[in-house]
Length: 478
Ligand code: GLN
Image (cartoon, rainbow, N blue to C red):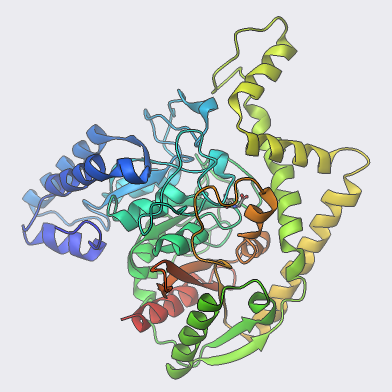
């Protein structure tokens, strides 16, 4: 069996027709991980027993001829920022090296109740801060298409494991691009659901007004199926929305004829790699041929998105990360004399350099005297960014842009220059600032054989249009 290309639909029919068992399937993926993940580094923890116990339950259902839930027997991996009861959950940080989650995140619980077989916890940048996975405190992840290159971040393990055939689908988190950017670098599909669509209960918070949980998979339909399972109101997360959840997988086949698709000129300016630009133009020609109306639009405040993001995200991170103080959850420094010393030393030893940089920046922009100049100003500009989108969506039904300015870069290429690293999120952070849904879909490979991605953004809670366009783009690749 080719674990690299297996889809949810194929898992379902193979189980139904007795061509495989959930246990055999889990064993194939576990062996693939054991044999080849050393080169990739996508898993931090493999949960063999949990996987086999779930697989046995599914095989029992199949034997009895019971109806199978939508993800029956589907091998999945979970980004290590989501709680998994009884399993080590590190957020990619040495500080949480020994932390065992006391409960399941809602998204994880929903996956498993839908029959998914959880293979383990996936590597990521520490506290989801990063664009290359090089901020993992454990080991970097390597891009399966070229192991000298990064897989993107912060959900690098989530993207690389799907691309390498170590999971059929995975969960990631996206605060400024962390699902879509690694999906583009690794040649897989990644969905940013609307803010509020998917519960964040059990997600280790980075920046609460920007954090989203979402799926990664090999196909748009698989990502849509997983999205359907994890979506919907959760009484345990007051920010989750009660909006009805459509049958997302069914929406994938919807006709795109007559849809108005916007191309924002600010997203195609200098700095965008020519091969990516050309590929996007080809995809747009395809959409035009399929009956979409292509409209040039403007999102005039785009140039402020990166500075606004790095103020809002760091401000919120500095507050969220205050809970890691050496008292609860984390390791504690022992060489201390006073309580204040204990907090200081534990945080100093526990957090990595990028996390410290963010806490410093965030504390600075919130401090008296600077609050008005930075944090308040950033929130005002954030409102203008939202207005840009509201205005655009009076003209168009969806927006198409690049995901990243370049294809996957080399390991070590940007680690010395945080600004350079931050700029790799230039096309993704705005969706988080305004809360709209988006998707990254593969659109071919460049001359070096590296994957390229295209992004589709939609109106709040209109994942359906986003998915139908994404699926039309996916069909164009064949
Ligand atoms: N790369 C961005 C950052 O470093 C986004 C991270 C994310 O989406 N979690 O903040």
